[in-house]
Length: 57
Image (cartoon, rainbow, N blue to C red; front, top):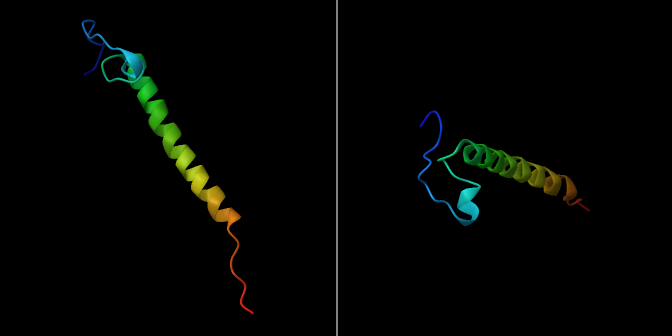
């Protein structure tokens, strides 16, 4: 798994950008995963801050 990728792999579509066979593909996969985690945490924090507690009368 270490080192260069397999040159005989023919990737098409989105698989050409996000794969485990090439170094740029692995980098794009990591960026996508970390970006998704960051976006999820940010969205949850934003939605929690937006909701107001119900006041008792």
